[in-house]
Amino acid sequence: MIKGLAVLSFSFLLGMWCGQLLGAWLAINTNVGGVGFAMIFLLLSKEFLSRKGWWSGELEFGIEFWNKLYIPVVIAMAASLNVKSALSSGWLAIVAGILPVLLAFWVFKALIGKFNPTQR
Amino acid sequence: MSELIQVIDKNGLIVAFLLVGLLTWLTDLFSKKILNSRIPGSAIAIFLALVFGYLGGVLADGEKGLADLPLFQGLSVLGGSMFRDFAIVATAIGASFILIRRSGLLGLISLILGIGVFFISGVAIAWMMGYRDAVSLCTIGAGACTYIVGPVTGGALGASSEVIALSIGTGVVKTIAVTILTPVLARKIGLDNPGAAMAFGGIMGTSSGVAAGLAATDPKLVPYGAVTATFYTGLGCLVCPSLFYLLLKAIVD
Image (tube, rainbow over all chains, first blue to last red; front, side, top):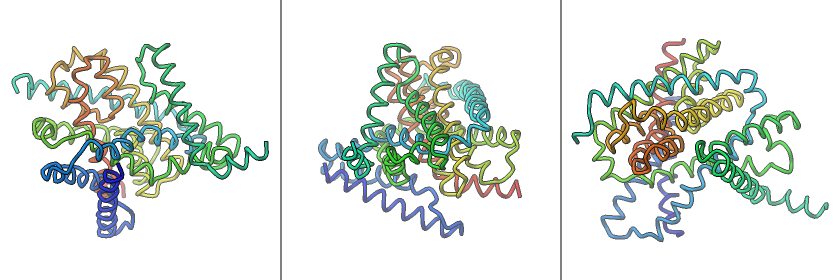
């Protein structure tokens, strides 16, 4: 378990480092895309370890645990936010949450019409 | 009683595990028994958490929602940026290179299209509602992608806590909208095969919304949608605070 957690931590720190470097390079002095880089490193690590035959269910469990924890973390995050002030423009959240979804359904239909994935 | 308060005071993070666990338990039950799983328990839990955050803000008059009350301060640790980013990175484990390669071009196009559509329309709506600074516009546009991309972008750009909360609210509304509309519209839009499900996950992005919506449509499609949706948040976290922000800043200023 702890080995999987170590792989995850390694990927996380490496990705965050890249994000920090990119942020410094863009001169905005914050972490830019560290999470995205870390995800890529995690997938590369998994690929590498699988090829070597070092990947195991036990190892994956350490990462899977955190995978499952992400919704609870988001719940805790939502509860510790400044919702009171956001609510003054709360209908923005509703409009900006629904309208793009309808638009995206339409885009999806157009895309499927072009590609027709049933033939794949 | 004072002993119990001492214990709670010292073990804030553990208290937060208990609170979130109980909330999830209740909302899962509510979702299954009363709503027939039509809205996922997690989406209800996140909405309730926002409500509690509002109540906490009213009661404590602070900036950290419920976490401003001493009893609930652990929530800001569990929901802090370290745990949040760590857990998000772990979700990448659900994807595999082989499956990604199979979804190939269509998945990639749908991911780029999806992030573009949601970001641009989110920014446009925020603009119409009176936001004019690039940081707030970008954060709300990112929130229209998912409730993770919003706060990650807002955090990176130094957006205000209100705007970040708004971006999360937007993302949660999106998750629920996708969950409800997917089974309703699936037949009309040709969402009935694995390839289409991969494109769907890439365009919609919200992992919980896509998974719940596809489960209500056809459970066999869930992993295909999830495979591309997993990348949506990571890609969004990569481009929203960087490329999209710079483009937006160039347009706004």
